[in-house]
Figure 1 (cartoon, rainbow, N blue to C red):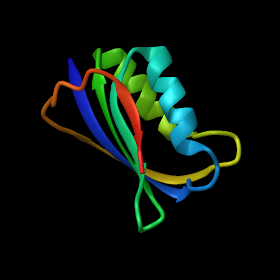
Figure 2: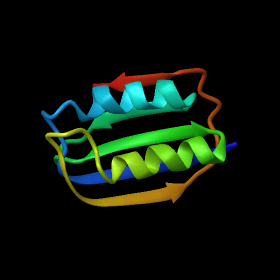
Figure 3: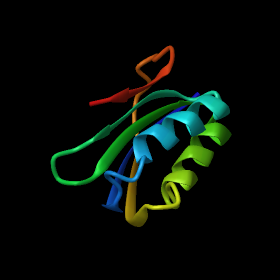
Figure 4: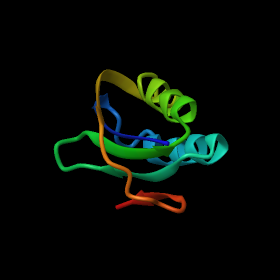
Length: 89
């Protein structure tokens, strides 16, 4: 299992980033969460099979169609053992 936290910079709020990320995570079998931050960024935590987590990190570099991703910072972290993927407010 792999665990990664990402911070996505750019035009990533009000473009359905969290909703689309959640659907991508569910399709890939990845657990964790995604949330908007007050700085205008999106932060997500992905846990699952290494190739599935990598796929989600790569997806974050593109985002949904209306997003403009300027930078993605990805950091490996310890697993928390999430049982599903959720959108946090």
